[in-house]
Length: 192
Image (cartoon, rainbow, N blue to C red; front, side, top):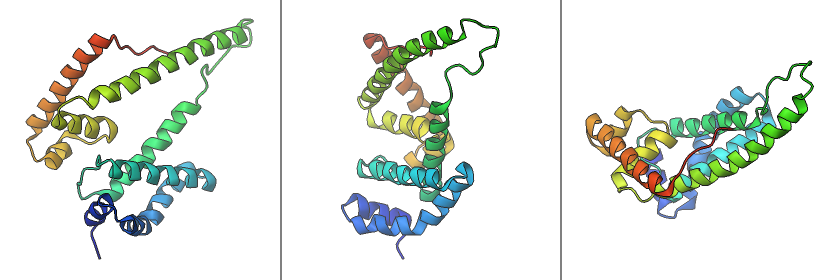
């Protein structure tokens, strides 16, 4: 019986059946975890599929970092997808008082500005991803593990085989480099 890490390596090398083994091994645990959060089987199926799609894209693009914790990594992906879904489904304005005669107009004006802000922010996030790809590889690794995978610095240090101070330093230099690149591009996020 191959370890998860070995199966991931085989899958990265083009052996698609290795991923089938991973899927068979972890699908029950992952689905149960998602279902326990969303309490809806159809939604759970959607999140389940999206989680494995994201995992496949990470592994195929060699962005998965072997930590011996494949299932917790899958669970974290699922949790983040669910959180993102909840964030995107919230209304723009939560409360409009009954005596506010301009309530609907306020909501409309907020939503127009929000659409523009969202478009601007999506472009900025796209630019940020491109800038991250220009960082030295060791800085890219730390940024991705910390920001996208929400890993603690202790774990990042173990994965990258360096001290915590080195991992922190790489993060610091990555942020400094990103700030310089952002200043050249005049990148800013707009509040919704």
